[in-house]
Length: 482
Picture 1 (cartoon, helix red, strand yellow):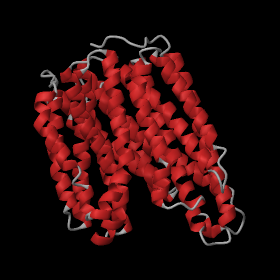
Picture 2: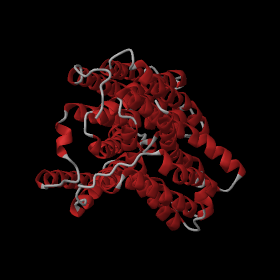
Picture 3: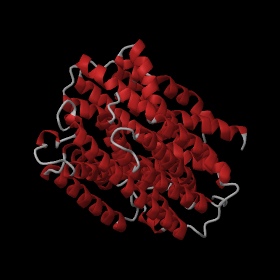
């Protein structure tokens, strides 16, 4: 690759690392900022969730806007908004102000995520260079998730809680300075203005489904949460019908008729479902079953995150020797094996098997992640790269929400089924069993739940491997793009 390409990749990797770090660093800062701002439990949830809700809700919209008004221009505008909102969040005097600042950060993040991937497509027209760039992109994203709790801990030890939000300011300033010279611009001057009803429908569908899914996962089945999800699905179907009849749709449904694109999005979504559910139950297991502190639990999750970042960098190198479809299918089978390893964890001594299983599963999943995205971006014209990137990111957000709701509900059902009669005080969660006579039986019941999640995850990964190998088996490892 040329020096300009490397500079562009470095510039695009920085905001990617920051966006993931900005999410995970808040987990450490939340207790302190909640105490100092006097945030209620409901306000704490909104401080955490409003960012991801609006990030997911605006991805499709921002993908379309970037293609009309310019991807680099949208990225730089989002960077400026992100920097300003970060300062507002750092010095927020009330929980309501912080929630509002986090909302702006989510919208700004939605301009950055698809723009970075689409600009990589323009920056690296050769497939092997695109694979390498996307490997760095994924490694940066994973690295941010890994560094977040550590950086947050250091900042909370030395500064006030608002310092966690100021991390983004110098990065965004640097992006604004070097971005215009280092990044290419892409703009489809003939693209029509985005359809406003479609914008509203896509936002409503995503917000309703994700919020309803999270409510189901955290609070169990309720008529309100189910109605939210059902309403979101209904709006999504209406959105699809509208796109089918518009002369210039917000989302090109023809993208999904491309088998490569449809398969890759399915795998991305499915991988998010399994890993979100697995990480949720693993965190609860480490803290509530094995009795680790949140920080200790976070440290035990580091091997999996580090392995994912390293494998994402190695995947493009491996793709020079083996077909992408074989690496992707084989990686998903490795992930299935890792999920089965988790089923060997016990209620008192399962930390080794749990961490090993999660690490193997993330290694396997990181092989197809960047490579399949490279195939997907390479399978469409360059002017549709923004749409593909936004759909991929939206699918990832949906996958996380569905994984938390679905596998979280499965784990809860198995846990409750394993409790004996009279254990009503601990039926809500295994954490409630601490200090009660039901602690041992609750540990066993939740460990059984972890095993079931491992089996379900292994089956889903195996099915995705079969789908990938069957549908993409004729896809060469490397092919020119554009």
